[in-house]
Image 1: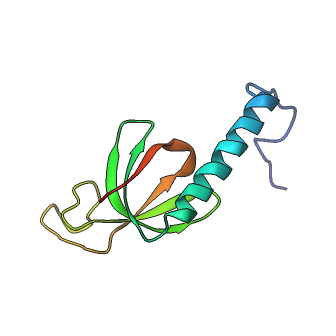
Image 2: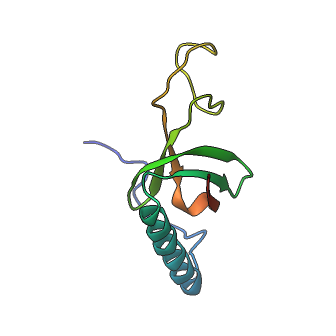
Length: 105
């Protein structure tokens, strides 16, 4: 017999307020629409944490926008050391963390 340590009564410690759920849903829909409209364009994205990424929007799903980094990027994680160079790095960014999206001319 398996014993599950997570069985039993639960105590709720947080629940999102209904008006915030609606606001976040609208925000996600708007961001999704904007990213879809600017698919395959060069953009500069700033997150709510102050990080800035330049790249091309190559895909979007319900949770992430996928940014192909521009040549010379410095924020991608490179598995083979700091001197490796990849020109096809895709950076997934959480939709809820996007603060600004600007077109790069």
